[in-house]
Image (cartoon, rainbow, N blue to C red; front, side, top):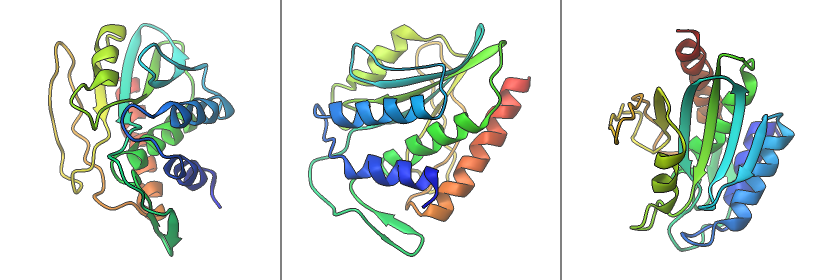
Length: 190
């Protein structure tokens, strides 16, 4: 099995309903370390954070690691991967981790990948914590939208409109990861 698909499969197999994301955050941090991130840690809010590269310029890629309650057994049928959170939003988050690790590291800027906690809860604890920690030129949010571009702004941040697939398949993961690589590389090169 491909390393990217294995990351998603393992992440989905870890139950992480809102306020119970610790094991999933720890797994994601270990996965980022294994892929060579310069820094990977669980922050004060419980978010899994990985930093790739160095420098003043900053792009944040944020997906949430928590899910709504309930259990959907993890299984793969052909190219489709089923399980709680495979689409919303562990799939896009796993793509962020994989795509960033394929890019060359630069001294002129850094990419920050965040697996935010409590995004399925009214508190939005993870994202609220991130707002005070980073000052990116732009941020990308991985949230299912049937490939429709979704833009939003929060505080002084600008977001990049990137749609995510509504259902997740190993093929979608490959294409979305490649798309992210090209998009991020273009943004960093500017």
